[in-house]
Image: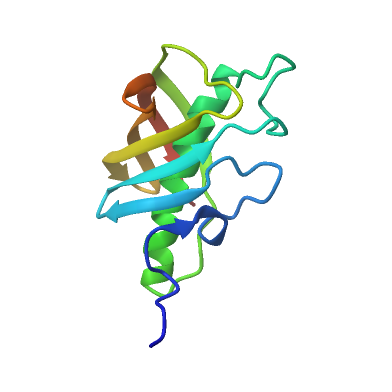
Length: 143
């Protein structure tokens, strides 16, 4: 019996145009239209981890953007399209309660709230276990 190569969970590097050392997310574990869940683990060698082993706040916005990219990449592949490149435009409302440390597993939930003319707005929530460590809205552009 053949295994579906797009069966969830799926490694994020199959879904993203990113490559190490820029890729921060690990797996897409759930995907529905306009939303999904992604996992990550903070690693010592991640670009955005400081000398004390704490991830920089700006990386949390990038985690949301990459999680959205994983969801879009999965949709592209399931519809037999090449994975699109996208660009993080910015965030006006993003609250960081605390930054994660090396070794902490992260759960990232994404909900697409708007799409118009190649722009998307997504709400992201990043958790360590049940603790919400960051959440907010991010705008992306997919040309």
